[in-house]
Length: 598
Image (cartoon, rainbow, N blue to C red; front, side, top):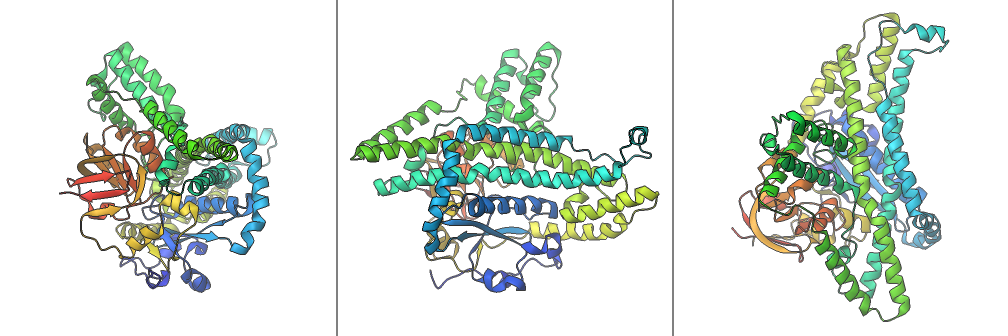
């Protein structure tokens, strides 16, 4: 394996006809000559879990802010001993990441700093988390209040009579800069707790591996299962609404999710319940929230209506649609008891109890941040971006509302200045002429990048991958990288991945690449996807098992599958390449294997 490597970034050939693609992104995120020696000496992997499609310039904003925020929390805030952060680049529109470790000689010196800083959060977790919710909701309110309305024909008289001294043009420019700052703040908040949540779990994980050398990773993960988290609330609200539709006698109104007509008092009562639930719980996107084309349940009600219809069908058939929480917690407690009894001293049992207790306290955040940031906040952010794009198109600076998605965030400042300065003198703007051809060309480039398949990794992989976040979140291990390099040429119809959620089942595969494909999933099929999104949870009662290309033990796909009692194998690498819809496959979520039977 040491002699094998992936291509260096400079050796990768992109699709034809994408010359000039680099200008879609800031110069600092591209591979290039300025850092070639450094970049060629590193291992980079394509983060298809979060950014599986080519990024538009505006979509790239969130990748850049997210990874920079993650890294600063590791390196500058908490001083996590073995991990500085994650470096990032864009290659032909796709995000590549490279975990940055700490010089082994410097790890010990960081431990006291980490203990003091992380310890403050662990000791005050509940109060700090309550404060975090207040901060995030306040930020959402601030973003919602931003005003991107078109500039007026004439300023309101009050601007003069109140002696304000500044006008609408200033405010529009200021609002946009505030918008960018609030987005950046949002991503700082995202990682304020997340890295510590993983760190606490990894501390418990490490203790278990040392105390019980033969314990499977899945066994440790099951000890923190059975938690109630807000991320599941949107799906639970749909179940309540489905039961309500049955009870009110209006179930048939949902037979066609694209044409739901609610009539009479029963319909009004149901609609009122919907209106209560939709904010915030239906600020839930069909994808992961990182792309402008992700659809939000609140704005596209036909998506949740379809899930309500499916739940109605199950309710009318007498099926139990509740999460199997009692079975999950009973299994959790059984495993905890068995392993705790193996410990030989009171000191070890005390350490086990303490580390497990902390892991359970912090673990809900590992999922909850996903709803509050990646879904609720991002839904509000996308509405504001589209609102600004519509204003620019209405006033003739852009040709279409979504042209703004093909501008970098710094370029939007230029358009707004053109808008403001020429509004001030009532003169023609130049943006449509200047940006029109560029945006048209960028659209062409982006379409070609979307159709391209990037390599899974770049550069020479380390002989052994030990960085815990890379393994736990992305499921990237020495074995999986070896498979990517083609060392495992097995044609026996088997795939190996992470044993993410226990159980063994056989059934027909259903490949899902986009949220729109979920409507094709039939009862009893096995979902096979590059990765799942939390908003796909309503599909889990229909499927027997789940298989993903990427994702580790602590990926959202793995966690959700465990909480819904669905067997899962994550991080197979090539599941969607080797398996086809209609194939009969066996999924062993306890062993981490997938076998193609027919």
